[in-house]
Figure (cartoon, rainbow, N blue to C red):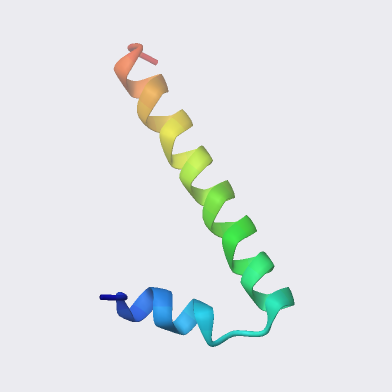
Length: 42
């Protein structure tokens, strides 16, 4: 069963899919970096 997000992304043009995935990965990476900094006492 697909989530609404997956269905939305799947229905997008390929170029838009890549943009969404790139932005999503960048956001996730930034979020993890901030979490790790906080955990490290930064």
